[in-house]
Length: 265
Image 1 (cartoon, rainbow, N blue to C red):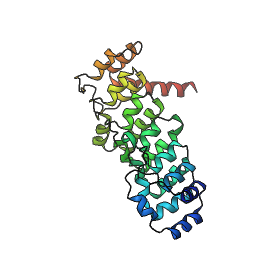
Image 2 (cartoon, rainbow, N blue to C red):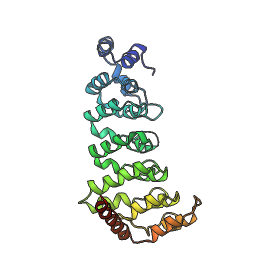
Image 3 (cartoon, rainbow, N blue to C red):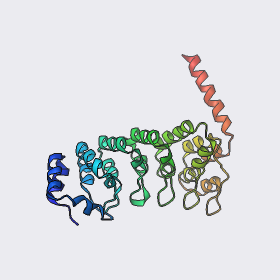
Image 4 (cartoon, rainbow, N blue to C red):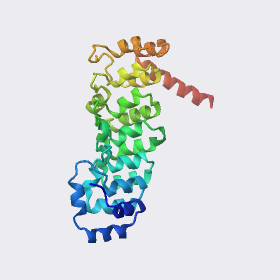
């Protein structure tokens, strides 16, 4: 079913009056659209164009459109994010914060997508604050956003999420342990993935978290150290030393540096 060109133009231009005029002309148009499994709705079109007023009007009387995927596997909030319509994304969440958890192509939520875009760090933190449990959402590869940040070497996103986890779940050791040791479809934890790309800073931040199990094995029976010693991304000496070390040493060194910097000033 192809969208009527008049309705499409109304969504593209944000013409709410034209929208209601069309409803007068065909009262069941949205009912027919909603019956389709995968379809570009007027809300998808408005999301791409950044027409927030039109989008809110659509969500008011057809909220189901906000969770519907188009033939490419994207919901309206996915399209708004991927088309840099930041205000549209924020407005979507003001209506329904759980839209963060809508899964599109590959099982990706908008949290998974912002993890890959260094220009969206401000949205990453906003998503986590608005909907804390979205940190546990998995792709079809059974990866959390933290897995993706480690695997794709997105250090700033990785660091921001790790700091958020420690703060948001400060009084919930069970949740900290769950997210930090969760295994993807290959049995890899975030530590395995940080080791696979030989990233000493990521490894250091992880082993400073008391809940991280550095002896956990993946589906191949490898620990993070095994993975690290098998990787071929440069000299792994620093990473090996960090993974073998006592994390309390880093905490003491950090405190010493802070005191020294204070004395120097």
